[in-house]
Length: 324
Length: 209
Image (cartoon, rainbow over all chains, first blue to last red):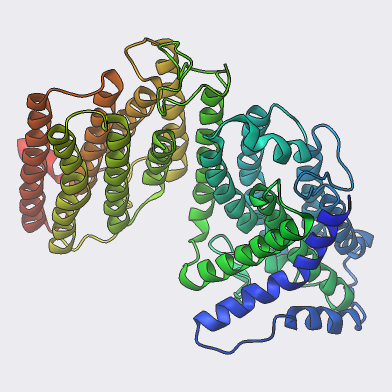
């Protein structure tokens, strides 16, 4: 049972890219490929060998495997409802974030290793966007620490709704932020467009131009898995704690599918940002996370007094103070 | 619910710094108007119906419908699509607005008083700072008008923070002030647009010569 979150995350990662593609195809008036087409593509690539440029070194060859390994290990930390993940310890969310960062770092140095100007440019952009999105993730996690008075991913989900009814409202903003962070982390619209064919405007795609065959398959699958990771973080907020495992699993998968459909819809109707606008768009996420953090400080009485009369009720709702 | 609306209002201030399209500025003002209506309704629902209806009319009809329709008319008449004439880069603007928000919260924390609803006050101060910064950092008259409206929204929130309700007379005066300012600035924008075919205020400094 402890591995159930991991199994569901892996299962959803298999269909996640397919659902995004299918949603986009339907909205564009096309029949589109089947849900499993991305998997078939990965299978086809896995049967091929990899071609390596003479200018590349061992770093380039091990980077895709390291990328996949880091994302899979990060998936070990995904809890399922009130059950912890395969791995869980205090401050595991920091480890989770930096596992994903290690994978990204490997891909960046692999891109630099090729010696290509285009790939270096893509690596530069990817590093900048990752650096800018990191504060948003950590401020959001800081808010969860405050609200739940706990320091692990599993405890966040266990304690989040036991604190205050106002937490539900902050979770809505938190889910919105996680969805946006996942778009940046996976280099999707509006930050990057995976469909672009011009190297000058690429971010993630230009970094992996020199990879082929088996390595390319690994990179494609890792991207899908990373999407599913963020989908799982969102799904855990919405799983009803008192329901049976079957119901929880259905809700988990429905939320994953919902996230994929939402991304497909947003990519169909959204224009890509100009390259120069990306940093400020990503910074907005950190600023929004800061507001959530300030709200969490207020809710936990660490800052300001929302019960100035001292009658034990919230001045907003008149309901009993959850932190007497 | 009030808490959630206030958080959304604070987020809308950040998105104001990110925006360049005039249509989106107007959308943000509509959203702010609706949020203010929600905050006012939940905060003041115990007061008498006439007074509450007036406040809801002020926020929903005037702030969310009337003024945005007028701004939209100005936008179309002066062919305004995009306003990227800010003197401060957007990246820096977002940092400054975030600092403004933190300052608002710190000030509110410092001024804690049983007569002040602190979180209302914090976001109200932040809104006034955002509006002022918006006016200072832009050259276009239209964005000055947007900044003014953001300040007005902040003042409305501030009025909610210091007591349950404002006297009807003061409410009327603020509404009249809002109407006149928007109308006068609207006419001013049209005149500037007709004369200079451009809404930046740089040319106005030449008038003294």
